[in-house]
Length: 122
Image (cartoon, rainbow, N blue to C red; front, side):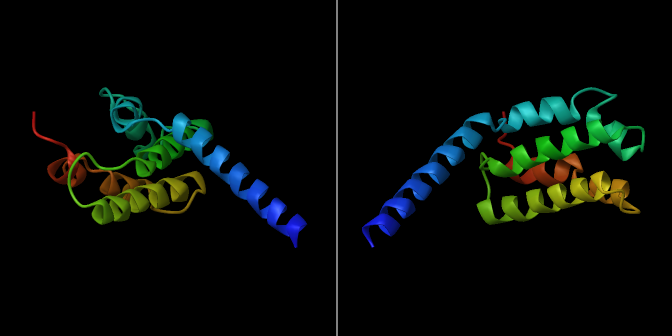
């Protein structure tokens, strides 16, 4: 019994360390926006237009996963979770070559869909 308890404690500690490392590696919202949506020829624009290679699509997916791991600066956290889950799912569909995924991703990442709810006014 003592051995089982020790194994459980070690496992929980390992999970905690992995979680902390992952949290430290997660990009902040502003960084995701800059890397994914910055500029006229953004990564998002290339992916939605079907002009991105697999590596670029996977990079965008990773950025959107980081986005989802953040907390919204304002607004309802449950709504944030729903919206970011839709974005991640659409990006996964693009990576997996699902028909119509680029259009779905474009809709899910429409700027004002999130900015109007979650972005604080300056």
